[in-house]
Length: 424
Ligand code: FAD
Ligand code: PYC
Image (cartoon, rainbow, N blue to C red; front, side, top):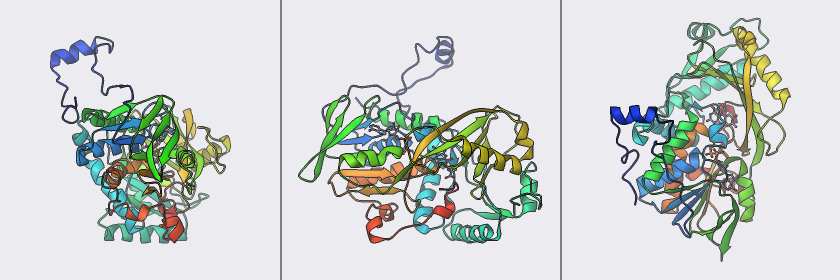
């Protein structure tokens, strides 16, 4: 029996909190159920990352479609959702992308309240640095385009940067001198696991089944329409299947004989030992291939551009880290003595125009949400919201109309390489 929305079944008192704190978790209520798959659903979502869980949540909440399963081959949030560096912003150049990411940013701004779950969204601002004349021209152009779309954006001088981030090396003598930056004050970071958990709990509360350790191995079709998915736990029937499998979208597309225009690359990140608060905003530089923010625990969260080769190993090459750390230390000499704690990689599906695919396909009832490349975390709520509309109504919302698969046939590409934030 479905409960009535996120957290509605949970009652807390001071005494229950104290009792549970001392019980070593045994008595904690489960945040979502772990049901066995049923033989049939109205909608199956393949992939239990943030986007898949958000899609299920909005299907239930906005469209009243609650007979839904989210089928995840590992554990929820174990893909890119739990591997990314959590940067959220909406400062994209072209109207189509700007509107989609801004919808997402607006949802972020109310997400903790909506989910009744703290996703720790912190609007500490995001800077994108410019290091040469062309960078600065691009920054002025994008900033102006953002403001025309009602998106907050400022252009900062080196003096502004020195004032806002005193530890940044703004010397004219550095190898890649900082000439300025674009700045989005409403951008920031969020806690990535909490996003997956919050959407999972919310979707579950409407009756959505979240099925982990269940790998999709085939897409069954009959007469040009989808009829269900083969999984490691048996066949599950459905007339609507939404695939949200990030770095494995072309693998699943192949199961339905669809050629997905994506390349799958490793993208890595690393964190340092915790240090006292020294960096109060997010600093990114596409030109030197490095970005950094400081987590609430004090760790420096650092990332780079993609590894050039394609593959499915969730690690990366040391060569990228070497260049990345050199760039970060040049920008922030104070970090050169900080020790790194750990490093990891995720697999990102990159499209030719650095924009996502949120689309129906030629197979009736089969929908794809993929190609977010290096930048889909920020889009999690907006992507789920628009994809839920596409599946429920069997047509795109105007926000995702331009992100259809057929743009790679028509040529109506939306090139967002400049705003990608991470070189790829
Ligand atoms: P995922 O979380 O990967 O979910 C897809 C799920 O599908 C996975 O859990 C996977 O196990 C499952 N799956 C795959 N195949 C199958 C199958 N056959 N059957 C069942 N399940 C399957 N974006 C930003 O906006 N800001 C950032 O700062 C940022 N930093 C990043 C840093 C790194 C190192 C990486 C790797 C990515 C970064 N990104 C960032 C990109 C962002 O992480 C992704 O675009 C986003 O998280 C994708 O979400 P998702 O839910 O689609 O994917
Ligand atoms: O898209 O903003 C972004 C981003 C930051 C780090 C990786 N991707």
